[in-house]
Length: 152
Image (cartoon, rainbow, N blue to C red; front, side, top):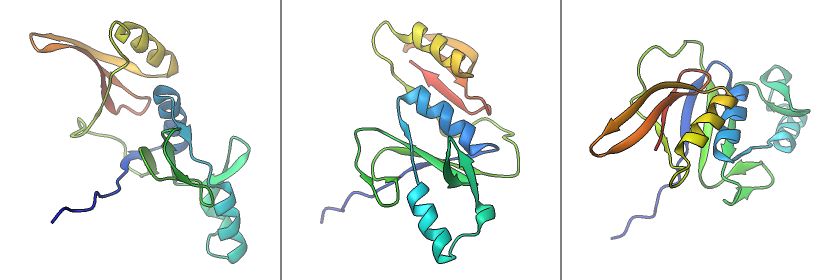
């Protein structure tokens, strides 16, 4: 029996989910999800308190979570929620304290790594170290909240 594929999203804890969404949308060429219409409907129904929302780039957003999605993937237009590749950032009270056990590897293409590292630095990422091993070369970076990722 073949199992139906499971839909998934990568959830990342954040002190400031909206700033993280802006960084990762720019880093990946993704779109920040627009949940404003869905939020307005929830507010009208009394299913969501006003305090659970913020103004984000001139539209309503959830205060404690926001996602970015691949622009070519399908999405639920009514809710603004991606149905494909996406990263969800959720607010947590504690700061990051240890090395990530899971991270993203970005592959900008042959001969484009150095330029991509510079572009990401311009967005607020930092270089943690450059790795040169017999198996390959890559740069370990950190996003604005310190989450590690690699550029190969």
